Image 1 (spheres, rainbow, N blue to C red):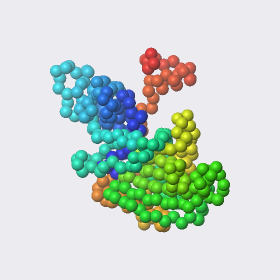
Image 2: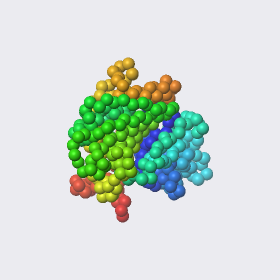
Image 3: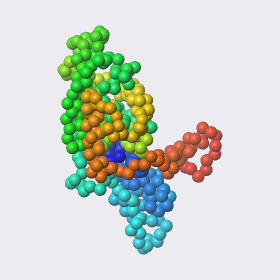
Image 4: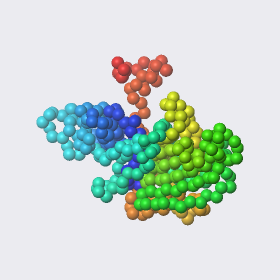
Length: 371
């Protein structure tokens, strides 16, 4: 895991004035919006007794602890301890870490590190047409795999004919030579592969596109945790089908990753079809997960520990760039011990009420949020 980068950590649509816990980098963060619509990010642990602040509530743009009502500003400083007399000074240690945040491309980005603003890496620069002309669908899942391994399969041109052979890979020529050039900068890499045809079978798609369609795949990675897949099917015209998948890979620990995907399309943009495309994207994710969770070792190995071929060039560029920043001391201490989720909020009052109704239990002291 890397520090000193902007992490895409949550869909912008998921952050409201109700505090939300984010698990990432072996830590707990809490995000919420103030009345101006700005996102605030704090460490999700009260310094008093260690309660999860994400179980608390927003009060005048500050966050109240659910245990004793301590009130924390957006900068993490405690400004009110209800049990103390008003004239009593608040201890200097009564504060939590706060984190810079930005919103772009449908995600909230959290900076984790110790670099001053002028030395921080930039956010990725992505094609404007994606967000101006395409219809998005959000989807997320949790995988029992290292985040770097999952990122790598999303920048692998050669895996499609095997991993996705039961979905769309059968339409791609089996013996297509994978040749491409990788364009790199200090934080990212990108490459493009063209397929002359998706196959010889006749279809309505062939008729609409004026012949057997060509498949163009452009794959990109952006440190520390984002990949972009741009797929175009057609003959290079305005009627080409475009499928774009923007993915944030949240490293929970060395063996767990939350994958947040935004699936864009330029056709059949009716919202009532979003469920169908979410199901399609879910199937592709599951096909990848079967392979990635079986890899050994689970974490990213050294370059010398695996074999490589020309088709791996983009993945190799990612590994080398990642290794560069690890060598610079930008790595976070890793542990083989899974992230202890013992303090993770498992149930809200509404959850408890719903469970009690299902099991015919009587729950006292919990007020229905709808009352």
